[in-house]
Image (cartoon, rainbow, N blue to C red; front, top):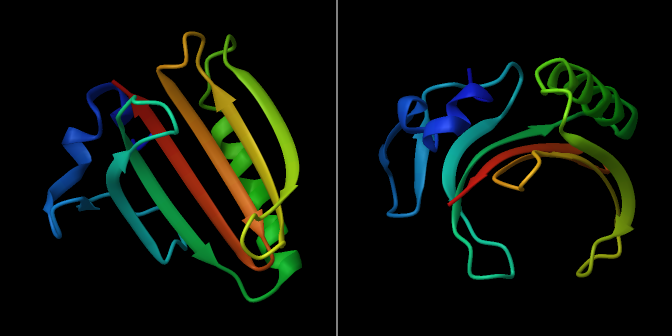
Length: 129
């Protein structure tokens, strides 16, 4: 439901904005501590909307398991022409290792990114205007 909602900038799964920028999501993914919908803006001037969920896990191995499970679930939803990729990098502020997996629609209008770092996992589904 959250993946499909990207087609209308998540209008059918969000409530009114709670602080002017972030809206509560009426869809919360299993085990997620928080799911919200917020504006997205990359380094360019493009603006979009994101469905974002976070999972704090009890350990690094549990986070890695959640990360792999989310990738498996998302891959099953993706059209075959989306490009996927995985990278590992260091966080600019903390130096912590971050592994990110992402899928991008041809033309770049939609993307899905899944992150794992330490014992935390994040999912971002974005639609760009």
